[in-house]
Length: 289
Length: 210
Ligand code: HEM
Ligand code: SF4
Ligand code: SF4
Image 1 (cartoon, rainbow over the protein chains, first blue to last red):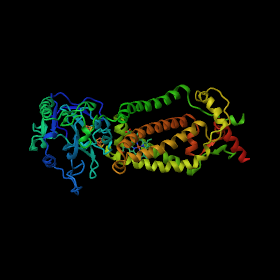
Image 2: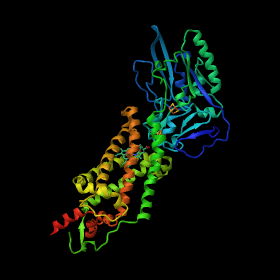
Image 3: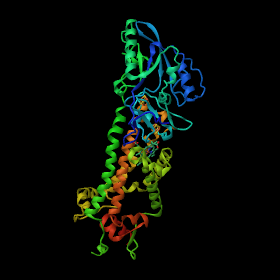
Image 4: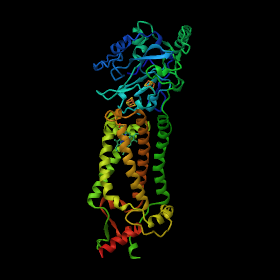
């Protein structure tokens, strides 16, 4: 449900202004991968708070469980064992889920008015009651996040606990994390906090430690502290330079408006032709000529 | 040709039924598809019971269209070879459209514009079908790579635009050419009409009846 106490920045497929008289601060969740121990408490908290229960699957022989995001699993831990630097084994565990992009591809692609909204605090939230189930959001997202539920054919993903935040609480995952790897606050604060963590990591020998807040999507409201910010792909394929696909940009930015006008012009041309040139009539005695 | 009434049979009852079935299904496919194309058209989804219903129905309507259209196309296929008279017509097309006096070349059953329309629809409906399958949630889309789905969704929109524009032209041309619509509703056209618009076809028909 739309949180009326949160201001709305934009809504999918809507051409009029969104309600926006209230003042709000841009928020962010900061996930410090160097502190994560892979306990999945956040995964459990997410299920618990949102009352979602995924199908019980089977063990694939790895820690990733469930193996992928789904309409019933809005966040999953992705485990990768890598040798990032000179043969030193590292276990990188990334909490995957919606990044709450400042420039959300899902929202741009969605054809249903108000099925995806972006709050002024940065949260991108799906409104399932307006969702048609077309799956366009999946084509728009550079992070492969939204999932259609096989049960109700609606799209689901992490809400950043917009309902909790609307009531002044922190997200359930941040509240639960036992090591403090998930923090929540204003985006400004989180960036400052991350800088401290990055300086610390650099001191400990992670020369390429850095913040993941990709510019290609205007920055995100879920950010990572990475030990190897130069190689985000190490973290189970985190996209290096995420961008809304040029095909989607062309489709929604150029084709959609241009072709809509085109149809109007075609109809208008017909009408104008008719009122200027007139109908093409046949003289009935033509055969006798 | 029936000389008494001066009427010539242009479309058999079978073709007429097929054509109007295609027309109805096409309009349903267009209205439900446009709902997804631009927010300005989203209200059209109400005609189908709202967004989710439009989403569910559109692809099925499309598949019915594909079947009905190809059935019609199989009957019309034979009339779509481009002739010398068609090439002559092309040179005069603007004059014809602006109703300047011209000598109509000996064009057969259909003129070049109609032949191009036929070919465009044939190609575009095939493209709409193939790309439509690729983007069809939740049944088929998950089987294709995300890159292909993105490509298909853009191609589907563009093909939809081309098809709808072609049909706008088709509807207007039929309305503008007085006497054409009765050819598809009642099946017959007047001899004068045939001679005026399709002299080659007219000659063929009058030869046959003599
Ligand atoms: C031939 C079989 C067809 C199939 C399987 C098909 C399938 C689809 C699907 C799956 C969608 C996404 C929305 C939804 O899930 O309902 C869609 C959208 C659309 N379809 Fe079709 N369709 C077909 C034919 C047509 C035809 C004949 C037209 C119109 C001439 C058309 C025009 C559109 C348009 C304009 C959109 C919106 C595209 C956009 O958002 O850019 N489709 N179609
Ligand atoms: S499936 Fe995604 S794109 Fe389609 S209406 Fe629902 S939220 Fe919007
Ligand atoms: S990560 Fe994907 S689903 Fe989340 S806001 Fe960005 S585009 Fe939308």
